[in-house]
Every structure is written in structure tokens, then in C-alpha cells.
Length: 133
Image (cartoon, rainbow, N blue to C red; front, side, top):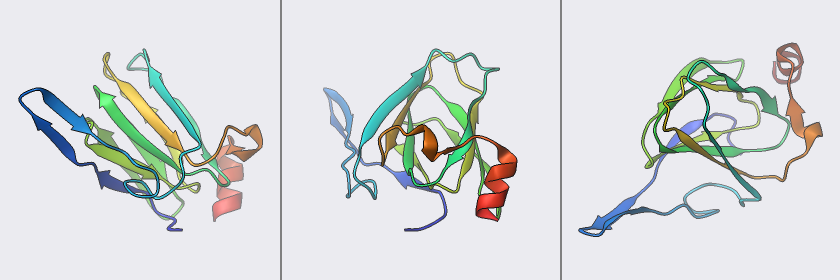
């Protein structure tokens, strides 16, 4: 498993009837999909995320609208703007991530490698630094 987040370009198919983008586990994305959720109706000044994981990998796709994702894996800090349903962001467990700057029409799809487990979350930045430094 890689320990660095990356952008995954998703293929867009379509004709005069419209467009279609396919996401397949262990093909388009590098893991089994165990959980799917989406974030929407988030005000632009609200920040979501603000955590990392011990084991869960995630893929984020702005299927509508846009948002900014801040990433920190103790080696690098960067921001990624998600603004296309054909651009996915792979988050590794060691990515402290925060989503913000949501457009009013943003729907952020999240595909996760594990079911929800509150013990998998690192919610304190100091603990994150302790675990991943």
C-alpha cells in the first residue's frame, strides 16, 4: 500500500444522451468498497473532516459542485480542489484531511475501504503527529 494521496482520473463515457462515469472496486480504485456516504448541504464557511485514520483508505469525488481538501501526511501539506465528477482523490490512512470551501451545490461522494469504526479515527492533531511522525 502506498502512503501518499493521489488524484485518480475517472473515465467519462457519453453520447448525445448524456455522460456516465464508472467507479469499480479494485480496478478504478485500489481497494474493496465497504462503505459509501456523501456530504452535501454544507455551508462554504464550514469545515469537515479534521481527522486521519489508522487503517481506512478513502476516495473523494465531488459529483456536483466543488470543495477544497487540505492534506497533511507529516511529510507534505497541500490543498486539492475537487471540482469535477471525473477527478477522484485517494486518501491514505496517514492523510490528516479537512474539507472546506464548499460550493452551495457540492455533493462530495466518499468511498471507504472499511466500515465505520470510531476506534479507527485519529481526531486530535497531536495524536496524529505522534502516530505518523
